[in-house]
Each structure stands twice: as C-alpha cells, then as structure tokens.
Image 1 (cartoon, rainbow, N blue to C red):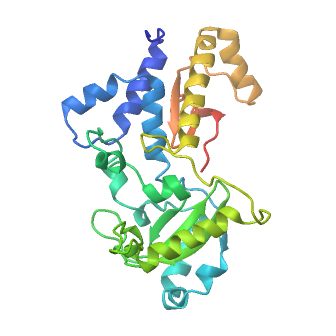
Image 2: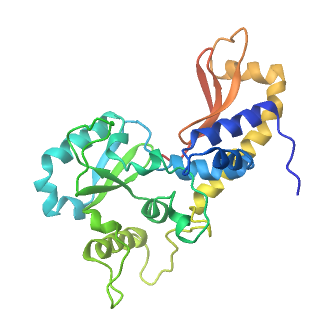
Image 3: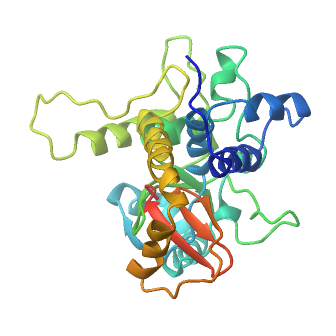
Length: 287
C-alpha cells in the first residue's frame, strides 16, 4: 500500500522526531532506515522512548503502605525526603532516572532479545518508573547510582510511590526450580495487588497489553492518535482564517507572520510558533 502524500510540515515533523530519538547503533545506516519510516511508525518509537522520562511538573505525592513500612524507608529517609521534595516542586527528575534512554531510544530488532534493548520492560508492562536516590550529582549530570530504588506510578498531577527495591528486581534469571528472586517476586506481588485492587473476588482482568514488538498497546494507540491528528489538522493550516482563529480562541494577539510547526513536548502534541512563542496543544500525553 502506498503512503499518502505528506505536506512539507508533516515531513519536517516526521524527520525532526526521528532525529530526536537516540539510536543504537548511532550511524548513518540506522538514521536513513529510521527516517524512511512512516510518521505513525516513528511516533510509536518516539512514545516508547519519551515515556521513560518524566515531564518537570509539580505533583502531589502519595506513598503506599508497602513502601512506607519497608525498613529501607527509614534508613534512606534523608535521600527520600530530598527526592520527593523535588517531585512536589516540579523539578527535573532526569538525573534520578535510568541512563539507558539517553542512548537507546531506538534499536533495530534482529533477534528476540533485541526486542527489549530499547524498552523499559517494567515500565511497559507495569507502568512503574524507577528512580535512584543518590544525593550527589556526577560530572555527566546524573545522581550517583544507588542500589535502593523508588518505584512509582507517575501521572500528570500525581506521584505514587509503590515500593522500594534493590537492583536485583531487574534480574530475570530464575532458579532451577523456576522461582524468581525475592525482590522480583515481591514486585509482581505488589503489581498484582494494585491491578486487582477494588475488583470483586474472582474477577478476570488484563493489567497490561503488550504488542509483539514489545511496545505497550496504549502507547501504540497514542501514536496512532497523534498521526491521525496531524493528518486531519495539517491541511487546515493552509487556511489563513483557521490559523488566525487559533490565536483568537487562545486570547493571544495575532503575530504578523505565523510560523507554525508540529511539535512534541515530551508526550504533548501540538503546534509551536517559536516567534511568539506559543504552543497550541492538540493532545496531552499521559504524564
């Protein structure tokens, strides 16, 4: 099936998004292959990458009892308090996040193992971000790595600490009898409890749906929605009356020369006019 013609704005948007995502290997071949993808495909990879970051936004903090009752909560009280204060103030939490998204935004899948090379398995499956509690900043801009990690559900206005784990929680190896290590076992227990919370006994539920590519289904649908919005709205941008109406409805003085372009601010999609500056949001992201 041939791809529908794209406007100059759409093409510029697709290429800009493709170039924003770090690739591994970071070479000309991977860039050319990536730039050759459709807008929908590029956006699937983008949402998978961008969801691993947290937008700097003030959030209400809640702490689950399983976290507050952990012996590490009191042992790490100073670091935890300092970190959660940053969350409440809306500071940039990137220094506390994993370093992998900085280089592994898109990795071509050639084997089954490669499927997860550019993905956060626990985030895709469970919806949990994990944060290091280091208090000192390293030269490269990230906090000193700590063995104890905070796991949290992050929404636009809330930050729910679900538990504390050490790094063995990422170990997928099983014992000869098929058992997971204690931390990973506890993680799944926490996740199952959250997923079934409030449901009547005996209910059947599907906590997470993952595509065969390893992407979360809700992010694939989000990427499809982004692409649909761009395809629907972009032709209207050649209508001067429609463009001026955007500024009027927002209560913004009309600039003499509008310079609108499609833009993603992490997971918020909209039109950016850098000359004003103003960002018209057409779709807010999940976090």
